[in-house]
Amino acid sequence: MSQSLTIQIDYELSDKITLENLKQSYESNCESYAALKLRHNNGEKLERYELQDMKDFKRIRAALKRIIKYYMDPFQQEQYFNARRT
Image (cartoon, rainbow, N blue to C red; front, side):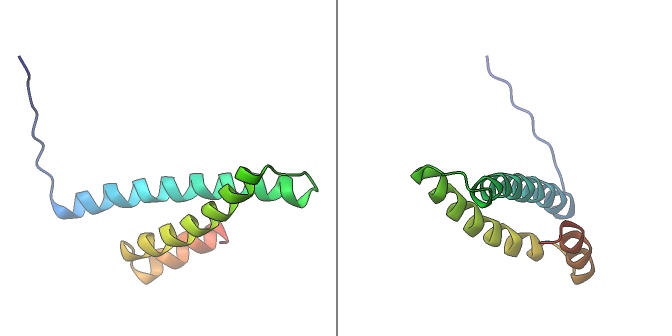
């Protein structure tokens, strides 16, 4: 016997949840990019797939930033992104 649960949430709460998930993805992506970039800048030879990952992380980071801005007002954008210095 399967059971289901329905939770009613309004669009504002849904947007807040979405924004928090996007921020987590953005921050994880930035950390992954920074780790590879640091290795590369320190002269370590990266594997071909790691170089591609680094390019992908950079591209995805820019896309996530655009999407996150959609869910924020200009003050929130400035506060969040200036705190991250990206």
